[in-house]
Length: 335
Image (cartoon, rainbow, N blue to C red; front, top):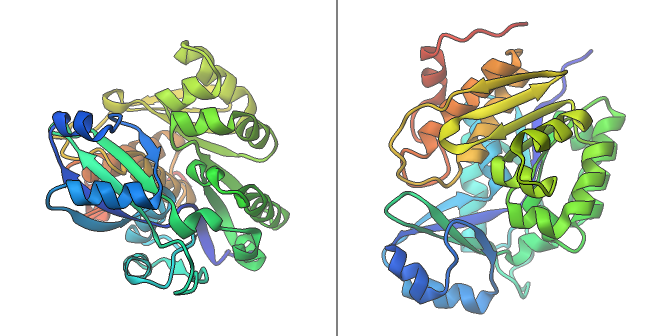
């Protein structure tokens, strides 16, 4: 088969992360629930921004982080997500393109009512992150933003579960899936957040059964998806309907399930500074390894290497050379 232009094309929320450190007491005072993502409006975003201390602005968005990770490793990749023609939108586009990813989604015009989305992330001393997300224009991604030729040129597309919160995003995903699959490509999905799963469980279940070839999730999302407290039972149910399942489990590492086999891949010990982006970079490095012929167990190990790097510092984009870290592990492609 001729080589496709892209190994992975991601679709998700185009955001800029605003990261600030705070004590747990700040979360209580500000009415922020610890460790989850809460959707907020523009008014709440302005209020919180006024309350936090010194902050760093770093381009984010879950699937955008994944795509940035793949591009950092030298993968051929592109991203689809909506920003406005404003200051944060320019930062987002520049940062993604600087990593080497193709980003061609049309900006929302300067006079659009909503602004570029931003996620105010409060990092507590234990490294846990509590996310307060104003979606802004990224909520209004539509099927018009999907370039079917680009999707047809992808070996894999990577769909962000958070994007299910948009009014027209389901149609956008359906268009992307159809174009990708018709050209022989495959579909991966990240569940993003247990509350996101609870909001869209039926739509996710239909997509998992009909279209998804590779599922990324963590333990909490897996349990929410299958509405059980039995982790093994949930994983077995997922493995019965999806070709490859990659489920992360914090300090316990990751579980990879495919074809009746299960691999447990231990986590890489590291000091947690900021857990933001751990799952995003795990998925990015896993997909990079998968498209470069590594065995599934090694894909999981490479995913853990990237996740360990990104939680060792503030921000959800790699700072160390992931290629060098992977080379140190002495893993080789199986094909």
